[in-house]
Length: 320
Image 1 (tube, one colour):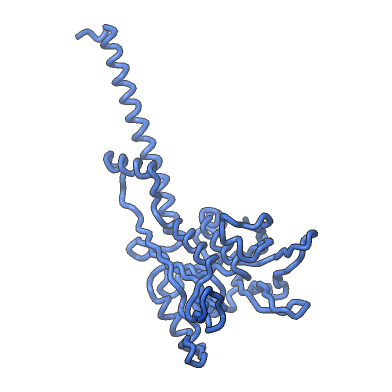
Image 2 (cartoon, rainbow, N blue to C red; image 1 turned 45 degrees about the vertical axis):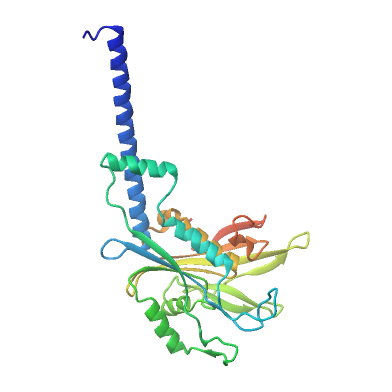
């Protein structure tokens, strides 16, 4: 067969095009695999991993104990027991999605092709769960007198809950999350630690302010104002803190806000973890934000967010 004939030239052209396509595909898959693996390793390094290299992230939402008479329903009767807020749960599920492998058709196709070409290396193990924090109450029953655990018992409960060698993301402040209360208490006196402190507003209503350890002389206040049209407008506070090697835990993250919307914004910010890595690296950090919003809860719902909301960093002032 002569390679100079038109048929031979067409055949060689087809072979060359197929070979080029295979080479381009292999190179592209190699780059995608390298970028994806690096991202997973950075994710594991930021959130903390066990000694065997695997990572387990436990996302813990607040435990709100409802007493009889505190709920409204269609029928008579009254619910009592444990509840969680929709805002915290929505935020927790969005954060958990960060740890899940991509399941799009394109990613599945690339994974299958990479496996056939021998480019599918060992995957990084990232397991995550959502759980509810322990309660502050001993028994929550309509026929039982309300009795709270002592501080010593709360410490024991928190120590037992945090004894597992996994990373914890604690959502919600100390009011309804005893695990947050325990970690905050353990961090008291460490410069840069942020705490939400109850205060009284000028009109006497209870409110919150954020205090940074080492800078107690300038607390950050939350405010309630009204827009020109008379609608309420809130200036809320939230912070994220990372503490590495907390007991047996590779890391503990605190996502605390002055309202449900603010707490949800803290978790939302944590889902943008590459931004936090770029600013703080893999070390401990604490960062305080201000959330301006027209709704104290709607920020938690991405489909019904308020038309007016803005996030601004308050502390530290020299990053992000």
